[in-house]
Length: 213
Length: 213
DNA sequence: GTCTATAATGTGATAGAC
DNA sequence: GTCTATCACATTATAGAC
Image (tube, rainbow over all chains, first blue to last red; front, side, top):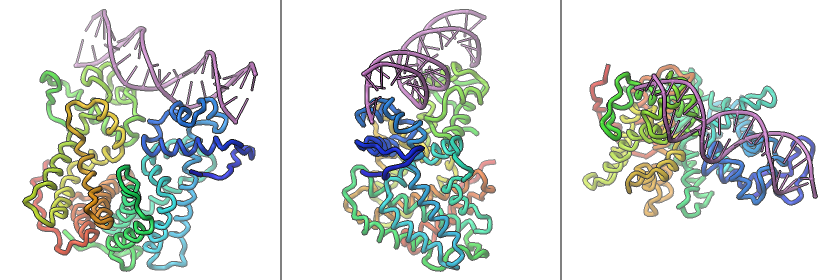
């Protein structure tokens, strides 16, 4: 599984035998199944077929492996942020965004699953190794859901729609599950999310207090 | 926060000064915020105000702390299983179940959040320390979502409704969030989940048990 | 019931040979 | 580019004093 292309980390070096890619692939598997903290470098090295020290030739630290794997997720989230903040789309941008996200999930389900699983670990790693003043795109994105201008009902439905998408991706990748057609899953998710969001104009309307209770 | 009553672990001993309860409370906080593996006994002992060795008087191992905290979740899941398998309710038992679950979330949100955060860690601990032949109720419960007799659409909506409930609970407990009225959250969740499940009738009059002081 | 002290092990990481 | 060997440190857990 190719996770990254030739990656100029520090000096533009390229791995000839593809060990670096294999390390990333194995690490991704283990981080998804066991989590970041529960996975040791010894375990990764063993599965790749090299020694621990060899890992340190390709990566400066264990943290860097995690950050490298999460880079596409960061990119995805940055893209998501840009779409949400685009003032061009006035009203129904949340639904448009969700449809776009569902398409992305089909291509990055494994990476998203890994983020869901190791969100807090990534947070602490990122906070410590902060390379540059940029904040985590994920945090910025999630902060949207805390907007006090939104009603509780809106926030629940927005957060819920994200949760549904992630849950759908996770469902399709369960160990015992048969292969699920990504297109069918995307189609199902689009309708389900639309039901949850009530299909109509999305939340940005400031005043929409729910009647219940 | 009282997590457990006097617990007869091994010989019916009761802690006089309530240290055991404080250990559980502190551990719960840390496990939710940092995760199980990322939390050390030293950290727990420090926050409780005792030494590491003192922890080993109250619990045989770190695993046992986790298992003790998860016991109410196990109980909740066993109860959920019983409800779902009850042949008395013919068709719309899933919605009934969801309404019940939403009520439970209000009372156990912190424990459920901890389960979500440490699901795989708990899985491995439980697999290793398997005391008795009983399987994890959580796994049994989730296996319902893999039923091949269900369509992908149904499975996505069922898993999605669970995800929405958990996401709602998590949303309400976010660090920056103002206090959210549990009753309002439950009400919102009931409607939202009903939309997702395409269930017609609005939620029945919530039979809320007398709230504690 | 809690302490001090220490054992036993695994971890991430580094140095230097080849 | 990968290896062997090792370091420094944190971890879970135990033994025994008080």
